Length: 188
Image (cartoon, rainbow, N blue to C red):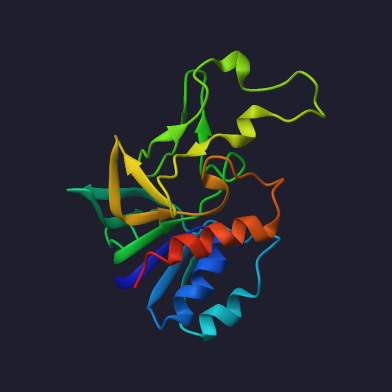
């Protein structure tokens, strides 16, 4: 299936990106495991032309020569989602857009470069009410939502929302939406 853009995630960043892409007249799809309590009416976006793959999970993305060329999802199995551009708005730890194990913090779909403190003892503050450092961990932003895989900035994959370093659920919806608008500004 071919689109101008495919968005991964249906939270504030993903739906903001979908609205902006549809406003540009682009054919886009949104893949999400579920709905977010902050979702606008997804049916309204579908009525405007959004292809919605709700209840599906992106398992991997193919990267060739600095470009994402396809996405593979659990439900579509052998049918790849192909687009000119992709927006990763998968969230952070709760939605598994960023994953932590005992040794590292990583982005599971593309293996993007992630900013985090390598010293695990610095990940949290024992004072529960204090700022928690792990909330700032996320995909490195190379400006305007541009991201990299193994140090190579990808030309057609952009990140928005909580998946990015320095943005967390404690931030305002406006800051999260602004990151989506910034990512969409790269797409013609």
